[in-house]
Image (cartoon, rainbow, N blue to C red; front, side, top):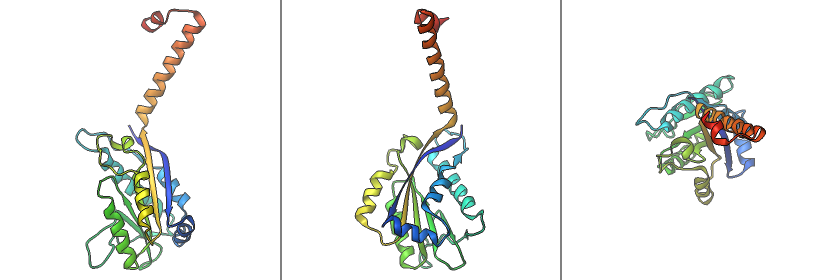
Length: 211
């Protein structure tokens, strides 16, 4: 039952123009990054007692690592934000060795504010070129039971008030499980067929449903 992305939202800080300029240094655009994420599919099975957000985070990280480096223009970079600290990003890529990095954090845990602190450290250390933070648009589409999961719209308001000095691309994702969606569509199709049969033949609805 694969989990596929059905919606990708994005907001750029401090502005669209600043984001476009910073991503140009990596040969990228915000639209490209949205497309990469929109093509993601998580094939991990549902497991009792394991939050599905863990599978999505791990597989999305691998997906982005592949898509960002497959052209050969970008290479894997150290995920460290500072040589003096042990803070690591989920993923980092750069165009050249020693060049500014695109740091990526995929965050479904409640301590999302820590990612902004890490981005600021990377900026202060002149390592961060662009930051990208991926959140859920609606936690219910990832794990409804995880009530403390941060969400895109609410955290976007926090970032606007914080006004980070570095380029930050905030991404929101939503999705669903393909098999469940297909089953619902099939059930709706059967129900529609039954209604049409009742209407066209003038048969009692109960008789049609029960055979």
